Amino acid sequence: MPWILNSSLTRRRLLWSAAAAITARAAAPAETRWALVSDIHVPADPENTYRGFKPFENFKAVVPQIVKANPDGVVISGDLARLEGLPGDYQALRALLAPLVEKTPVALALGNHDDRKNFLAAFGELLKDRRQPAAGRQVLVVEKPPVRWVVLDSSIQVSYGAGLLGKAQRAWLETYLAAADSTPTLLVVHHPPDDADGNLHDSDRLLRMVAPHRQVKAIVYGHSHVYRYSVEQGIHLVNLPATGYNFSDREPVGWVEARFTPSGGEFTLRALAGNREQDGKAVRLEWRG
Image (cartoon, rainbow, N blue to C red):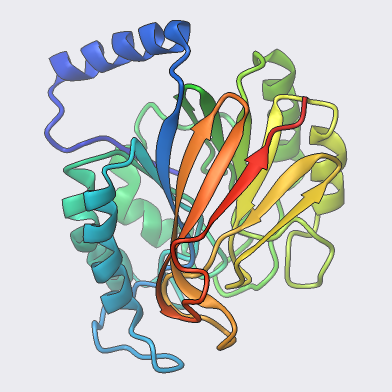
């Protein structure tokens, strides 16, 4: 997944930013703030409608909300494109992201409605020198003290519902975590880490593997278009709401504003549509020791 740097960065500013990041890590900042988004399903056609929602217009409305919130970064956990990952979908997404990228970096994950080839054609140049060696998957590590993000790739092929990390990506992750320091680490993956048929097929192996690595505090995911929090083996599971549309009137449509400290995270729902009963409500999660 690309870590899209602010478009105004020059090489000198980029080098300064890298040095500042090292200094910031040593200083252990008290908190970092993030916008968490999922299942935006951006179509090339702004009028495309599903269940009464227009995903293009929804994401267009969310972007200025995030810009106003002024987070340190943004994570979008997959299903960037409407249904089949068409080239026009990604061109529309690039245009919609422009005001956001001007203000803050953005990390993008792939979902089951994304086409890797078309995605790379639109965003590939932004991946230069940022890929992790994970057997062709688009994997990203973002250091933003006091937390670290590891963005994984669970996409098998476009329009195939279920997801899979695969042996090579799991092996890369285990090697990485074994060498990583104790910085609280959050994993991002599109598919829910459970054994439902349409979710992450190797979720049991993922959870079994990461459980002993105590720096892993949470897994953030989407796909289900459900807003929910749970815990598995001490690891918090954060199911982000969809931004494009919900599958049930009981669910919100929107995004999550998150604040992270060394000891935990606070997640506040920003509901754009759907069920807005929890709009503005915060959920506090304490990290395992």
